[in-house]
Image 1 (cartoon, rainbow, N blue to C red):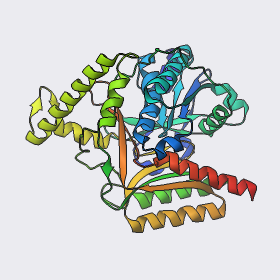
Image 2 (image 1 turned 90 degrees about the horizontal axis):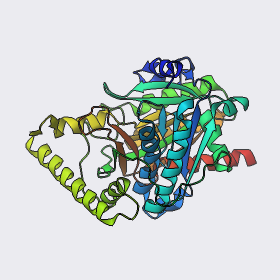
Image 3 (image 1 turned 90 degrees about the vertical axis):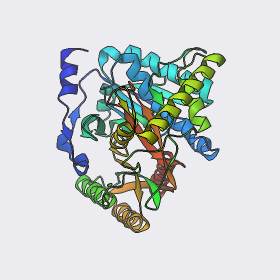
Length: 391
């Protein structure tokens, strides 16, 4: 990576108070020549309706894992969207990222039996159409920060991808992305306050950005009115489980095409590691430098349960009273024209992870609702926007 791109990544603004997420002065534009690697699952609503949301989430996280591993770095700006993802790629990495996207698309088809769209969109095309990709970072914990995106460029690129523009072909059958570290071991995380609620709010038809920023601040404040700030993952971390689907998904992520015995061996290894972590959690013992209790606590602090991607996205655990206040504030924003929104309630959250190394502290954990999550909220958001356009 050339010096200017390294300087851009190293100099990205980092903020620690999430209510600052809508402050436009914190964001920096991607340098010239960069591209946006994007993907989503086609008709994820049907897949979710058949109970395959864990597979949908795994496919979305695979985009981040595949592109990051192919480029040999995990500091590129990215955002996880539940049924898809976006990764900002520097100029010299575009060719490698293109191959990685095609390989992920093939893996999703062959091993998950899902259809995925993938595209690589030049930032210059985004700017020529009146939008931009601007990036900042939110410090989720001492060890992990997540990229936040503004400028409307991600949304524009996603819409063009869904129209068939910038599409990349799938790789040949048998090609595989490098999904090292992609993990899906955690059980669903039940709500403790009432409901796990996935919320998406984007600027409305009035394009009144000061009003939208005030809405974001109000929503964050309402969600934060408990000791955990609406965090859906317990402070001591989630329970490690033996969900068969998660075990199978992770085994497939690391095995070659049609390598049945490879998948069986990985399944037994993953099961053994899970048993060991559970044993260490119960006993409080350590395995060399690895301490399971400390690791589970860091899992909770390293999650991305709230983000900004041309709009606010949150998956929070809240009680009924706060949910009604949030819903009322969103409705107020919709009626005034300052926002469109989608909201989906469920009984649990779901976690998918990227763990570059079992002993590293920069493991990343993507949280979504366990029964529709962001995909269901996005569907309702789309319906709301269409009704306004038709009305």
